[in-house]
Length: 358
Image (cartoon, helix red, strand yellow):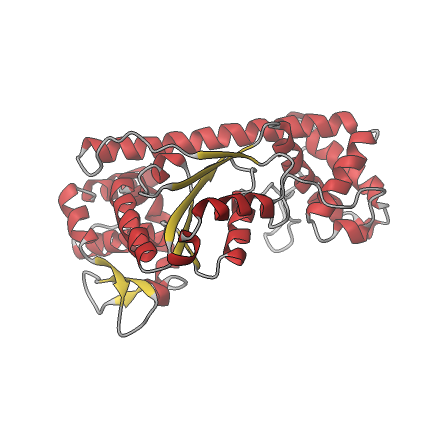
């Protein structure tokens, strides 16, 4: 209840007038003789600061982290326009700007180079995420004397159990003594070759498992699909696939609501989204996917442009971006995160100035 009141207080301050005034305090450019692009923040009080200097300090303060979801929900339109302008300017200046995100916001990024990663067999995503969790759980059993095969079997059986079937937790221990929770699948697959299996396979060993890379994944998938725990692995994979789809749908709905809100107050216009080039990553490595994109960019990969990438979680967007950065000397990336944090900083300063306690 207390938190709800605080969020309501903050939302009341996110008026079109305040947001317009705060956006005017954010400037994108090259400052103080530097050849590096940056964002200048003119605070409501105090001296001008630059995102590059405060992104790991001022913009990571608890008051920012606490209030950024509320600010982000109400400022999608403002940030989308800021990002589109910034990326366009960097591309025209000779950089190859790589932008990864969701279609709901990426649709507003003006560029001809638009790609969407797909997976023709959705169960592959579930298997990849499932095996990431299984390997992480199995590694916790290394010191118990179990073999890698035994550890993997025990891990997948445990993770596939319904929550209600798992034993009740022991009496809570102090935080510093508590055992770490079971590893969750990361939001994006780790930086390894994606849909095309690496050389490997065979009987799992600790040396293969410990890197938690594509070779470990391939080895474990092959082992688990032939093991006594096959049914548990299939069940866990199906669960992970559905969780991925549901999570992406929930995120998309939240972003769409923010865009509709921005359009309702006239910040964004309704548009017909430009088409994307669809790339099925099934059977391809991340390097092969990146090569398709670089070829499509042609000479712009040398002279500068903006390239956007969307797709379902688990299709390898993050890994593909890493490959693109390695292949393109002029590549740079863009994220809206620090713009939302900068706006949240200004919102917090405004509330403090007005005597509004958050």
